[in-house]
Image (cartoon, rainbow, N blue to C red; front, side, top):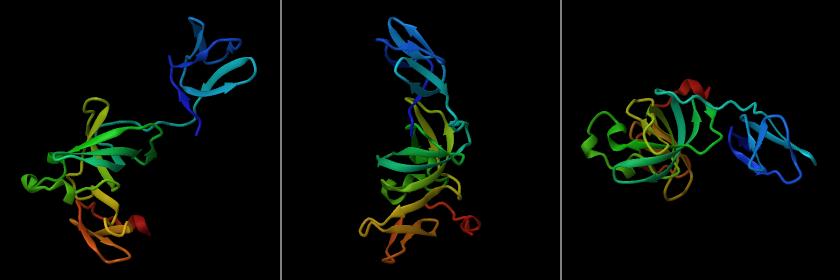
Length: 186
């Protein structure tokens, strides 16, 4: 995948190269003047518009992500898709304990809801802080979609709202499971 440059981003020192379409020179350095992909020949550097469409970040967007790490009161998620559109940059989401489910929040054990590596479906509820999006799985359709069994490292699928089943060994593990949509599987 080709790097996407953003307006104002340094491309390189000018040296013998000329600034072309979509670029400008300042202090003997070439910068991007538009979002796009770099093209370069022996003498000219240009930026042409990228055809990749970044997903729109809106409150209420459905995200697919992978659990990176877990703390006592939150889960950190790498966002892979937003409303079905693949994310090209690294975006991190935070799922706080109070946003995992609607009931019995004080009884929640984070490691019985999510584990690193789990693929989850969540809803964006806030822009948060420090470039992290706040997420929620407090709906039946939201939670773990796929996981690996801790012992066998084999695929697990939803069994109930709070259990996943290893397809090879039959072992079960606790999770906050997304209600399966069997219509999508056909």
